[in-house]
Length: 339
Image (cartoon, rainbow, N blue to C red; front, side, top):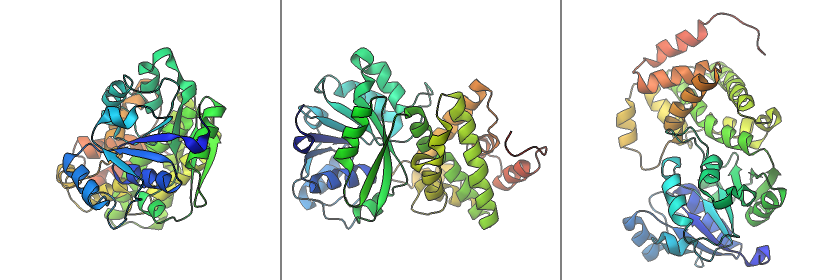
């Protein structure tokens, strides 16, 4: 492969996060093509070089290219960065594999678990990639709001792959003076931390919407982390990973800020809005809503005690009143903290 500095990069997905990452890479001097699903948004980007839908008021680098043609976005690229909703990843990845360079590297910055299969992004890739070539697949996760990255505020994430070389390559591609990247070989831990924190962010938003304060939020974050670690251990993750950027780091970020779509969904539910109304008025995807279904199913499948996930699922899909869900959480049988 070419020198890292000469890589041609395709970024698949022009939401706020995909746009911020694509622009960051273009500013580093890479040749970057951003794939845009919505035709109207593509026209806006071509005309004004600003993603007014998802990352407004940020002029994009003149070197960044835009296309609505998936084959053009992926062909002849050394690195492909996937930043799509999890529910469409399988279809897009399968289509793209017909045109990609077999020696290229794939990196996913999406966070979620597919509802139908209960698979993470890397597990879907393993199913679809010829020869199960996961040594060329990485996942990227950590506490990083797109708007703050676009403003060049110091941020840090982790690049995880079963191949240390691939993790380091993605690390080098992404790293800037304001975007610090670490490496890991714990792909399950990094993916699960990034996905499950979205469910906890909805829970944190709900308790804020109900009018509760810092005590409640701190308890929710801490016990939420315990649930994430229990499921992670059952699925082969390293417990230490959850003390890092893709675990507690991302959990703290999304459970404490209205910049988080998932926290905002919870906040509105806590204030009395219905999920259908909230989702209808959102342009961007709140992955935690879908991940709540997947996490609930995984907990049942593996016999893992996840009471917060169970109650959030009941609120979202069984119309359980949020206040009663919180009361049921607080009223459970008393137990030791670490068991």
